Length: 330
Ligand SMILES: *[C@@H]1O[C@H](CO)[C@@H](O)[C@H](O)[C@H]1NC(C)=O
Ligand SMILES: *[C@@H]1O[C@H](CO)[C@@H](O)[C@H](O)[C@H]1NC(C)=O
Ligand SMILES: *[C@@H]1O[C@H](CO)[C@@H](O)[C@H](O)[C@H]1NC(C)=O
Image 1: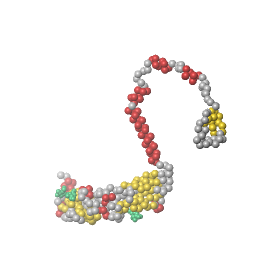
Image 2 (image 1 turned 45 degrees about the horizontal axis):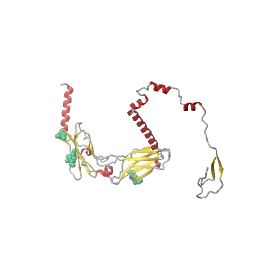
Image 3 (image 1 turned 45 degrees about the vertical axis):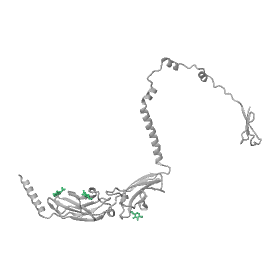
């Protein structure tokens, strides 16, 4: 055995014995948190703890005893909402944790108590914008909750939508208590970039949600309706696809049609290639166009009053009821 190994063995025996003989220190900074309705206990390592310390965390509601959460874990947090689906969105919870090293355990450290729906931090909604001429469509997606959903947990959840011209946030316009998750911002200036931020308001969680990321979009002109272009493009594409499919499916028949396998009989070809001798063809080719035969027609004014019932046709002459002009054919 080398000297270095001897020193190492001696040191580790000494250190181990001090921990085992003394009381294991308790975890520090224990606090229960909730983000988007999860339930997470967080803590710090005990003073002077060895790296091999493990932790056991438990939680309870006001109406139950402690339940197992995480057992013998080495990291410094435990997400109870991932372990157990029996957590209620309206529950009031607290947690506790203790450190363990070998057979030795620290005392339990209790956390703060939280009301899940009141105290959870509601995450940011996600916002997407769609510019449509002089208006901007805002569509809002709620944050995903670990337990329940936003609409389920809060009977009244509304959006505060703030929008402003890019670079003029101090002149922002706010729309509050919006219930729908799709809103159209109208009466905007044309060809202008607008930015939008959304927060969720609830009656029981007074903090409101974290604000969404700021998203910006530019308005265009009144006429520029992008969906018309989209529809036209779609139709053109669809026709092109159909043509391609038809060509592929009927390629045999099409190639037969243009390049027939069976050759024309020789006498047929000769007939088709021979100079035409039809008299009609020769006439149209050689002579001037035939003289057209027509009747001369002249128009004379007719000043006789037209009476009801006698506007009928006379021999060679026709009257029109409403006109003063008769056409005489000679
Ligand atoms: C979850 O909670 C139920 C009681 O509602 C309990 O019986 C069960 O052991 C718990 N599971 C975990 C993993 O903590
Ligand atoms: C946790 O560690 C303790 C002490 O080492 C041990 O007695 C217990 O069986 C362990 N529990 C689990 C679930 O591993
Ligand atoms: C939403 O707007 C209302 C009215 O302006 C205001 O009272 C409320 O604090 C706002 N909520 C958030 C979360 O910004």
